[in-house]
Amino acid sequence: MAGFHIDRISEDIKREIISLMRELKDPRIAGKLLSVVTVTVSSDLSYAKVYVSAMGGIDEAKEACKGLESAQGYIRRALGNNLHLRKAPELTFIPDDSIEQGMKIFEKLNSNEN
Image (cartoon, rainbow, N blue to C red; front, side, top):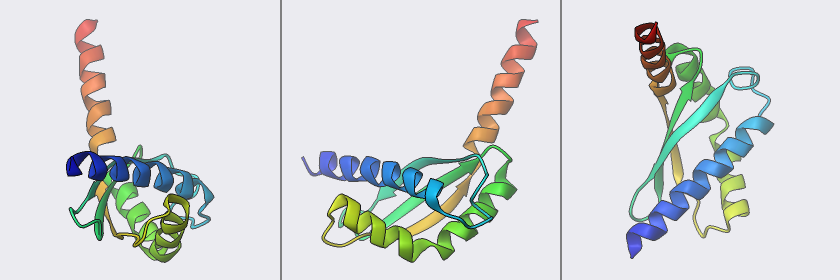
């Protein structure tokens, strides 16, 4: 039963972070095609790992993660207020290249069809 609660909180945090990323004005984040791939929350809800991917590749994702780390206080406060959490989790942003890998696979599949 507890697994459902953590999964629901993970999805809620993911949804809120995506909406908050649109509001941030940091040049490392604004104007980039970023995606939150997944959010992993610890069992006591005190830590969360946020995997961020970018269309521009892993270097762009690393730069975006630096910007998100600098806005972590704002994001935590907004998460606590919007989700009505007793304690907002401490966020760790991890760059991920899954979008780039997916595009490579898609291109290989398209080249094999022709």
